[in-house]
Image (cartoon, rainbow, N blue to C red; front, side, top):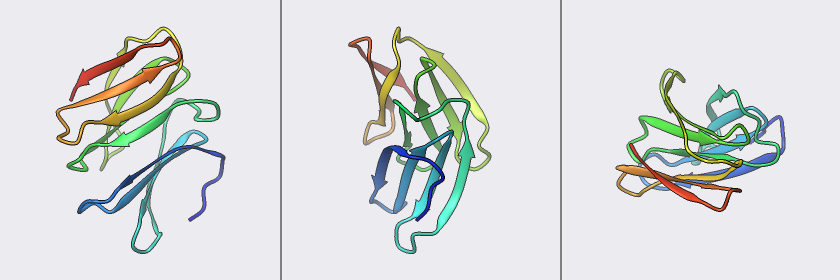
Length: 119
């Protein structure tokens, strides 16, 4: 597996999706863990150089990102299109994860808050 920048965040989805989600540079990349093949890479408007991350929805249909620009964005997995943009933090977003059931996701920020968002 090769990425073009330093890795800021990784998420292993071990269920039927068997994907590794990597946040590096200005991309979110998805790898097949059985072959280590790059499945796709999506350009995003933030840089994962100092903070931030991404998380794949449990059904694999979308993914969420957050980072230094304070915005939380949800993207369609297949098209890479931004579906929604949310703001609620007053500091850079350090981490993002979907709940196991996919009904919500959480973001943690340098401002000392954790926010829960409905999917």
